[in-house]
Image (cartoon, rainbow, N blue to C red; front, side):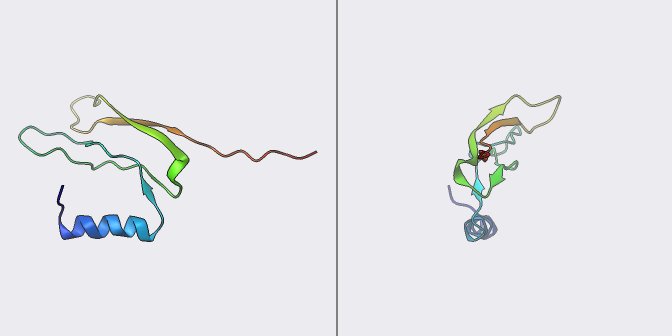
Length: 79
């Protein structure tokens, strides 16, 4: 979808800083308004987050709850 100039500049800055945005589904829903991605999960490596899940909101919030699997790197100790 088409965004504002500021939205495009923000997304271009992500690329310039070598950041990955993993949240791709709308995270805020309000009646009679377009759903938006306002809650982001960003990392400096593409494969650091396996998948971002959008779950039910907590209480009366119009934001969904996010959860994800973080891919941690472990360095093996050599004897």
